[in-house]
Image 1 (cartoon, rainbow, N blue to C red):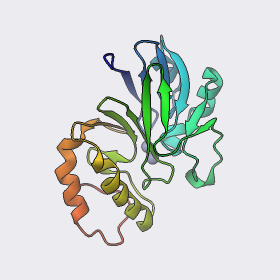
Image 2: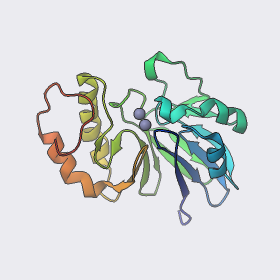
Image 3: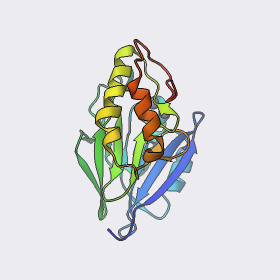
Length: 209
Ligand SMILES: [Zn+2]
Ligand SMILES: [Zn+2]
């Protein structure tokens, strides 16, 4: 693919959650990923594009705070993992996304990865034929997403080993909070983290523990 997708990122709301817009440069079709807050700002991000879907990385409130409003404004299908969702909430999506599914955006495609741990419905969206992946709160530059139980933390470890570390070094991860980073730059630290016995730990982890 000669024309790469355009990526627009903006931190919105009190948790400074990164909302993303991906645009096909040929057709100008776009997707909005994680309508967390500030609908007017999200609408601005979509300027001069044709929105075709709203994608949800996971159902934590900081990522879906403006979902109802954006759904009403854009009138496009909402796509998310079938769950279970955050605290048993009922999410009405138009399309449920599972591991390995693809979402078409103009002449481009996004590949869906299910990456549970931080929460059970966590998805990552990789641009096919491109090094960029929208990773939600699955992984940050400094550590994995916070977990609520020892079981969830073990799930995170499995996700890191089986899915995230299987991505190539040149992968650039765009998380739900904070800066993007190159996976290869963190690989050795993540492998060292996985080599440690973390016992019954859960919560906010950093790679150097
Ligand atoms: Zn989250
Ligand atoms: Zn978040």
